[in-house]
Image (cartoon, rainbow, N blue to C red; front, side, top):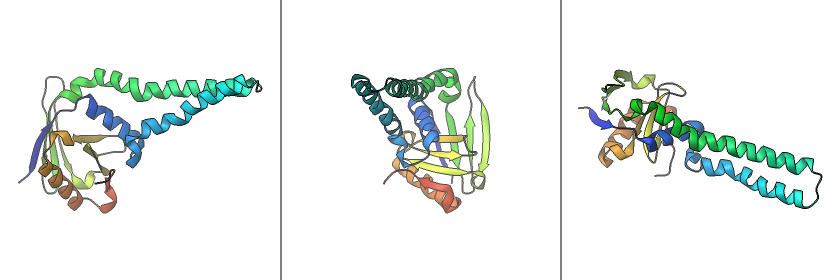
Length: 179
């Protein structure tokens, strides 16, 4: 008997997947903050160096580089995902029906803007990550089926985890949070 459920990917699911895809580690939840911290600290340091009559080139270069990096990555982390989601929202908001069987899983999506069917053997998955908020079934380095846990019951989460761990090599299944 298959495990069956339907998911709809809202912006939160999309954003979580994008951020996770960039880091793919336990630290993905704090990655945005941790990434920005050095740049945030360099800005006051550069201003302090300017006020201390330090040779002008060093603090100006540090300030410019920090501001540029801060703005560029701020755009990539906070603004670009919203723009991309708005462009592609028809693809993401269409419900996806999953059926997980013993050796393969199927995904159906039927909508006016995005329809499709995939049947994938677990052996074809390159990696599966379980996070606090979902399962990411990667079929290539950058392409995955995100399954948000908020669309599942606790029993379904346990059953999916068990099924995936049973059908995948140990090195292909990675848990990215403390249980």
